[in-house]
Length: 147
Image: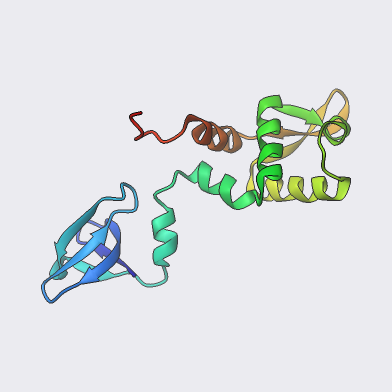
């Protein structure tokens, strides 16, 4: 796989190349098409796997890269549902040790999913719009699913 761009600037993942045309996939839609080789140029410095991932909405990509297991996903979901929570209340409410909780919260902050906040006069956390959008999209399921 390689990354290519057509004359309109659309970026594709090159799947297969023949003498006159190439099979490409549009990362935004997942659709494939045969395009003339003369209309494509290589894109350097962009991994085809990163380009393929770009078809997933950014808030979901951020959530997926910030959570490492079901427990940290559950922590983020809990934070989104609560909107704002003090650090002490959160520590009492979840089944993570203080070290694991702090590590997960640090990763969420670095990813832009939560921010430090004062909650009832105490140190705590508030979710960002990015977290709300990411979890909301995941909960809503596949927008292309007609079932």
